[in-house]
Image (cartoon, rainbow, N blue to C red; front, top):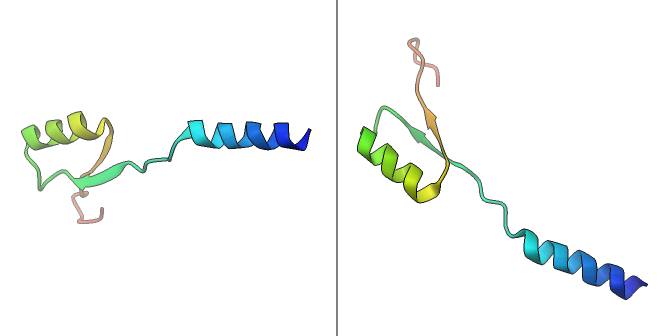
Length: 56
C-alpha cells in the first residue's frame, strides 16, 4: 500500500513540472515591438507603468 502511494506521489510530482514565475518589465523602457516579442517568447509578462507621482 505504501509503495503504491509513494509511486502515485512521485508520478504526480514528475508530471506537474516546475512552476515558472512571470517576468516583470518596465513599460516605459520598451518599444511596442519589443513588448510584443517578449509576450511571444514568454507567453505571459507583467508590464509596470509608473504613476504620475513617481510611485511604481
